[in-house]
Length: 320
Length: 254
Image (tube, rainbow over all chains, first blue to last red; front, side, top):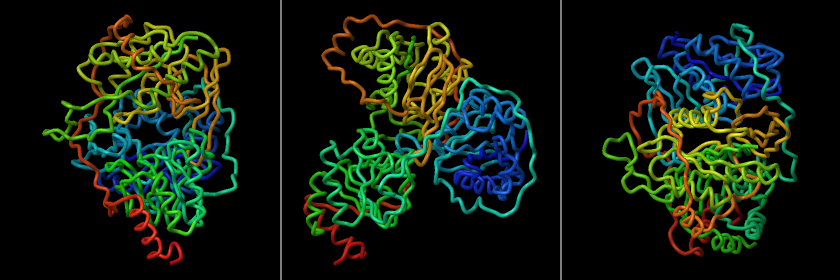
């Protein structure tokens, strides 16, 4: 048992992910309150080499083995569950990412440690963690405590500033071999998005459309508005799922993070997965038929209206 | 191929959620429920996989006393079998649900178990990896593009930035489905009603420990720190105001 705060570090192509810095920054603050250490937990074929990028951690536990060259949920769970059960950190912070969801829930069931999901804040009260979780598509926050005082939290991207977790230095590394292996899931290949004609992360004006666009033929209305504004069209997940725009235009958790000068959110309700990709835009204007849509919580200006009527009207006002 | 789909209902977000007097639960008296969106994708994928490779689709729901319509809708969409699991006063937390589903799955044949990658109310984590770990099965979440070949499945797992990993997974396995290859098929209400009258729902009794290990201290409506300044009026008036704002800020030329 310890009062340490562990952070599961995600990495790709030899680089630590942004999520690790967001979590390490918070872990340092929490560890100061518990008189424990902020510990970076890294698994990989050459995990210890990442220590030089983890200066904010007090120390690094590197779980190293050739079988961990690529992430699989089974290999990570087999390697990490015995380690977490043995070390009993006060708290394990895991990014709420594609891989983090698998690892955190699997570790919870395997170790018996409780799990608080979709965390947007983590604090220490009376020596043990409290976690604020975002549920019901961002409409309700739930603050929980772990019954045994220890647990795991999956943290949504952008919950904490990355800057607090970026520090120079190379902490001491403890190298451990995985306690067990599990090859029932085999990594085959990584598919990278095709470079499209438009890079939405570089556009300063985005006309972003969601479910409210209704049908494929209406995408043209957004294209015309974007042309009048000198910007590009992006989307939330349902529009990409429907194949109405390429995946390279998708903003959000499984798409891209954007920070344009203007983000016009049209017919986008604003699920947490979408908000984490666009909430830092300089000016957000949202139009949606649902007055209670969470998008209005992050927008600077909002209107409850039908985008199919607003888009052509606005295009016309802009001389398009 | 025995395909099993775990389904549940969640509060309908089309209606306003309210926090009850205790401050630690939703006001549930008048709440209406809908099928969890991602579970519908999981069912659609299971139906597609069965239609390709043959076999049977079995849908499991925890019996909260009000899941007949949910399961009848699964049957109306083409599931072969529907099973109610246990007896619950209301939908339990994910850990309890996972133990109950795992107990039922120990008595039911399963090559591939599919469920929604997440639900809007899974405070204590996602059911897929929890069920898998209870059963000692491999699991993959955030899955699209499922293909079955022999005793393994090939799946895609999505990451940020549009990156996708392709895995080969030994069966039996549990998958948390992000989206289906086609939109979930429609089931006519008349057919659902007819099935509710005539179909025999099977029942599996389970005895499991309840509890997630979490205690809810408080619920709140999130403060966003920024409430949008709302623009009233007709679509034309809204367009006028937005155009004016963009000009004031120099985003478009005056």
